[in-house]
Amino acid sequence: SINGMPVHDDILAVVNHIDQMVTLLLLEFRNNTGLGHHQQHLTNTPSHSPCLEHLLSENLLDILYEWSTSAG
Image 1 (cartoon, rainbow, N blue to C red):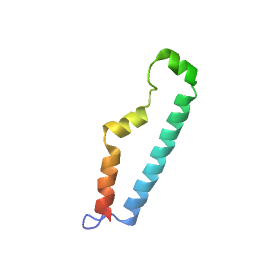
Image 2 (cartoon, one colour):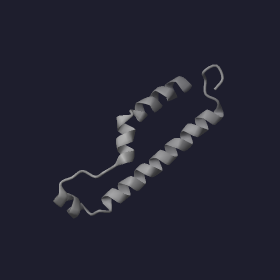
Image 3 (spheres, helix red, strand yellow):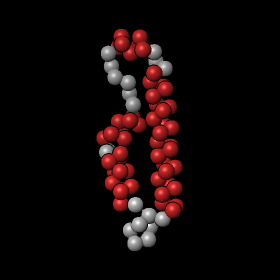
């Protein structure tokens, strides 16, 4: 970045990372729902979603929003 402002490559990298993150979240969701609704109901345990847990525990959406407002 120049003078604290992101350059085109910075923005492209973030967009690509978001795309990868969404892909991983979708795969994780598909794997969790693939267990079958009936089986999940019997175990009474929440689905294990490490990608979603990381996204939420690290406040990545807040960080992304703050970065995007400063990027212009």
